[in-house]
Image (cartoon, rainbow, N blue to C red; front, side):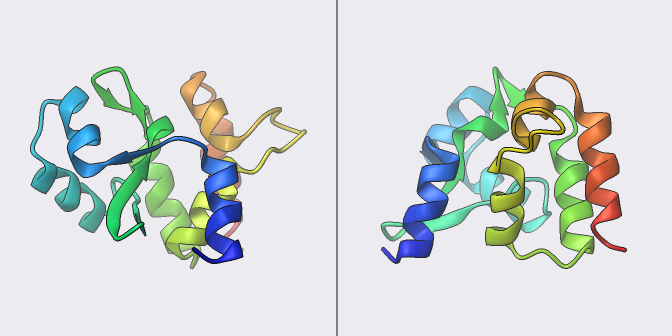
Length: 119
């Protein structure tokens, strides 16, 4: 693991394997891969296994507004690692992290900021 990976692990905290992410959503691990390909989820390879941040799952669904926000970040030219860093880096003006704001139903402001990144 590189120091960059370690830093991302520190920011994200808890990770889920495809199987762990699929269980609460009631889908197969292959469906999680499809959601990643469709840019509705983001995952990185950790320890040889594709994993997603646990914070992306809210009960039995994805965090409200996550897929749209991921598309905005991708459209702004953010790589997966850059998008994850942005979502999990504290921002005093929110306050908290963008993913925390989305989990607290404050996603409109997060998406507004993500749209502004492209300009």
